[in-house]
Amino acid sequence: MKNLLFTNEEILPYDFVKSEVLKDSELIQRRKDNLYMALILGRNYNKLARINAVSTEGKKQIEGVVLAITEEYVIIKGGTKIPVCCIEETRIY
Image (cartoon, rainbow, N blue to C red):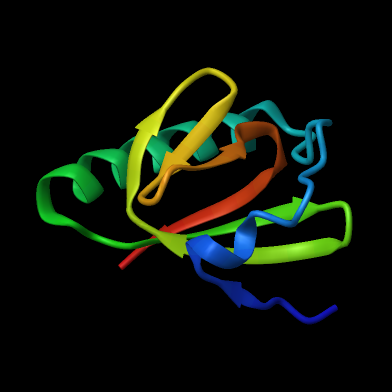
């Protein structure tokens, strides 16, 4: 399966899955920690985060600055909301 990189404007037509994609509680905690680190570095230093998420059409890579995190959503620059439960991995660079 090919991962594609999307910008904020291209994300809008995709529907993300609403079920949890990670099965292990340790991986879920690691995802939460990585998202928090992406939030801190994005707000303070404008660092980009690459988020691997699962949509109804397959896996997608989304690149952007994380501006906010709620219990259910990650909000990246441009106002795009991504459900936390569909995020597999977050990398900061």
